[in-house]
Length: 296
Picture 1 (cartoon, one colour):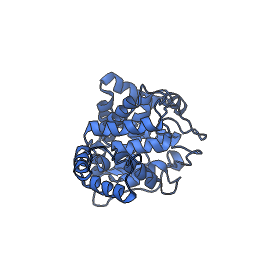
Picture 2 (picture 1 turned 180 degrees about the vertical axis):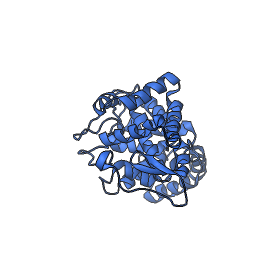
Picture 3 (picture 1 turned 90 degrees about the horizontal axis):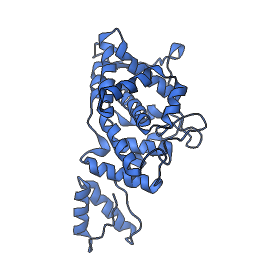
Picture 4 (picture 1 turned 60 degrees about the vertical axis):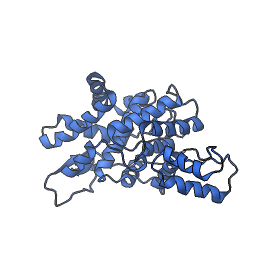
């Protein structure tokens, strides 16, 4: 998370005497065990393993989502450092979201909030690093959970196995997945941060992993997961991400000469459409001409 320029701060209590004391436990669920700094029950493992999108990406196809993210990045920074092009970065954001099972529009909005201009080499004054502004505590959280792969506890080991499977979805080959897991488990945080300012792939995998971990810990609630990711350092942090996600999903172009009332009408029309094509189809019926006044 960015600290200083963007004013965000992540506070996650991990390890030793700083182990998070607040435990999340449902008495109706018999089996619980720790994942990082949290207590995760069996039902939450299902959330950790899910790879379906929710919320902002409902009814949107891959091309629609990638195009929306591409247009946003191009507008913010047409030459993001570390990426071949805005399109390549947008596709990578989508692929990492799909692999780990987090909403790609929310993830893109969060990266926009954190990195500002989608440059992989951004480092905040407090040391938060990369596209998703990973902190040392965030890296510790990821490491603690991936280490479950080697746990002697069979039930606990499920967590690591799920994370390994999600990573396989992203890295595509066993060797590249093993390299990623080895990086998570063996590299120091200093070494990891050196990688995060160079590798878009690792920066996105790290951010998506942490996002998914918190999503599982928070029972699939995106608002709580995003706030946990931030640690409460910014007032209404989820609101900021939510507004960016709204902008990303349905972005009004103010270059036309429609009145504010007409623009609000178009927003209402597109809000009920189930796709970008549906929105355009409705607009073409409403407007006297076929120009695209609504850019999403």
